[in-house]
Image (cartoon, rainbow, N blue to C red; front, side, top):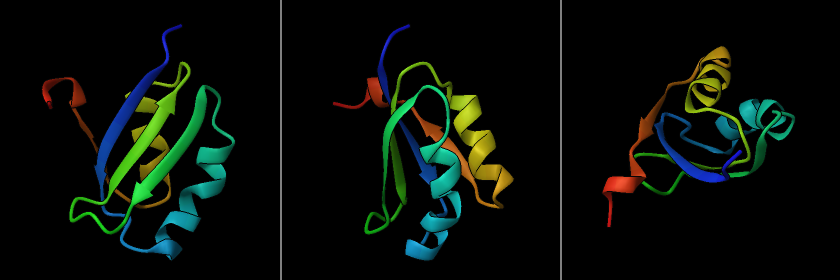
Amino acid sequence: MENKNLQFKTNLNCGGCVSKVQSDLDNADGLCEWNVDIANGDKILTVKSEGITEEEIVAIIKSKGFKAEPIDISSQS
């Protein structure tokens, strides 16, 4: 399966929010590494995928009470 970088606009506003999703993201199959830029106004979650889908990542974030919306990075320069 193809490795891809995925990005999501989230409402993970602080380190406490990030810590609530950390365990689930750390243990998700097909997810190599991830990071949330809480300094960015859109609170961008960047994921290095090794098979996990956008839908699976959104489901993980939503299961913890937060929002995640995929960003199409292929259209960005």
